[in-house]
Image (cartoon, rainbow, N blue to C red; front, side, top):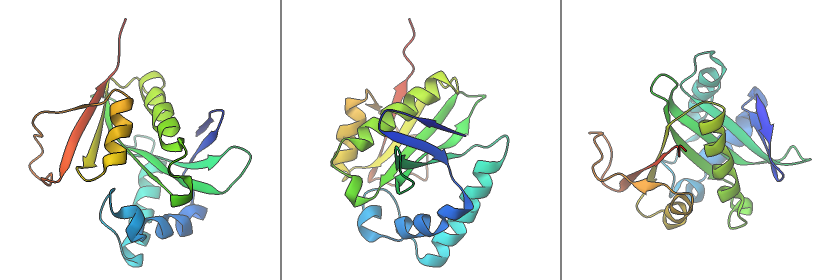
Length: 171
């Protein structure tokens, strides 16, 4: 499964992406604002788990590899996790290589995947958990109309993380 915009191709995760996945998720600078930095063994295990999860027909996880149109060089990943078609909700997350940051690609990709979630997957609510220190990420989702959720009901959510939500607009 994949789709394209005028700037980026969103394609499914494949076994050939393992090296790029491990490189991304073991990079301390990239993981500083997005999650916990993994060692190589952890990243390899996470990749295999993610690949398996995305290939299930009733997957609760959907990950796209982001590539500039007309290239095969990956820019990063964007994913829906905790995807529930019955509850019509999912959490969104993105991670981009440093070379792709600060060029409007994150805004473009998150906007496109939010639209995909609402229009193609019939989601009504998309969440984002961001570290409070991730100022660029917070600015991005605020520009896209996400709003902070006042009380985060998840008991295991760290205090340095804020939950945001975007509800599908209806006419």
